[in-house]
Length: 605
Image 1 (cartoon, one colour):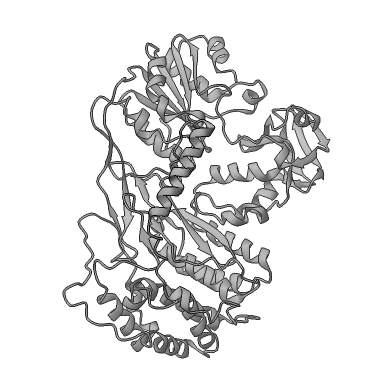
Image 2 (cartoon, one colour; image 1 turned 180 degrees about the vertical axis):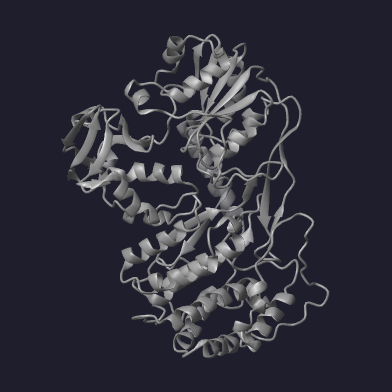
């Protein structure tokens, strides 16, 4: 089952003497053990032909070359995950790409390119018959079928098409894949044998194409939400081939790759190693937080107790322009580089970056009430600021807002204290669980089991198939099992665009309680464990690695966790210091006739 984060062991620090004794014991035990066996050598250790560079130089690309490279990218990825020799790790498949690229680039037409690819694939060796170990696609719990109709496309040519179909028909069941495996107990893919080439000197057209081909095929075969990608996935490969191959420096390469990843529309998917070059680039930020509210960029908080007010910005100001450019124009300019499952989440991330840039003064035009002001706040080093990424209340994890209402924010909860939270909330009419944040610890079962009276399904997953790359199968539903102490009152879960991944999965679990409702707005729409992807140039990307659905197979990706009652902040509420989403939750607990003034008092931040 997913954990959505690595688990860490916590324990008390022993006295100094005990530390020394423990260290001595560890050293003694280690000395008695036989030396660890060196990692098994693979073809990646023995093939060094392109360690210093791909030797591929591309000055321009014709339409014919782009079309031929599109076919090569698909063939290269298909063979990587289907041919018995490559599945077994017998070839350095990245370097094999560089060996065939010159012939494909030099081909005058499609037929010549297909002939070069056919000669290259057949040189891998004859694919023997699978002889009773043939893989078949089990359709009993099939969610997503592999895309294989292109193997019968006459445009591949008779020889290449026939060879690829033979490779597909003779894939074997039960064989591990060298370039991909599935995490035990979870099922998201891991790409342990993909090399990042950290010391690569850019530009290098071959390695830049390799990055695109690797990513495109990982999405094609191992991304559980491939069917949600807008448009034709093959067309995206064609469109980005010239952008990646002709990127003239490291930053251009990173931005092109970032833009490609954004086409997947998965909030988990990004070029996380290169966020520093994503516009607006810079090491400093205005020490004030902004957020899109009612489609306007609004100042919501300060990130420094003295530097924030010194900017001249006030909470509730509407930011209209930065350095003379309208906010809407900046959003349109930067959108291609912001990967997100939905627009509210994209605007969340753009807002977090909007006030970033070079250190020093920046021109900001704001609307304050009915007055337009031109301000010159100073951007400050990020290291000096306390930047928040939550919309919950300050204070401890558990708060009693009144004798009738308990409040629990998951940004600072402890799994070991789950029972004590329930005991502290006992006797209240309702418990507000604020997940407008990312949970500090994995609370799905430790807390969720205390909200149900009987085994309660709340989610199910899809996972990939090593014998049938591109196929995804349903797994059985995941359930909460009842535990004590149990909370008996109303449960109101707060969500918004900051609720992502583990936060969304947690909300699914808590919502399955019969006395629970969700209040808020669209969440990030990126649920499930992530799969990191190493890329050339020392880059790191990731994707959502398993599909997460409700037990009845309703989706969560892109849609997010839809609220039962929609509630959003307003500009006036922000100016007044109110938490209007919490106010709606309180009315659900205290009743619609509860005094507005009392509700506002309890919800004050």
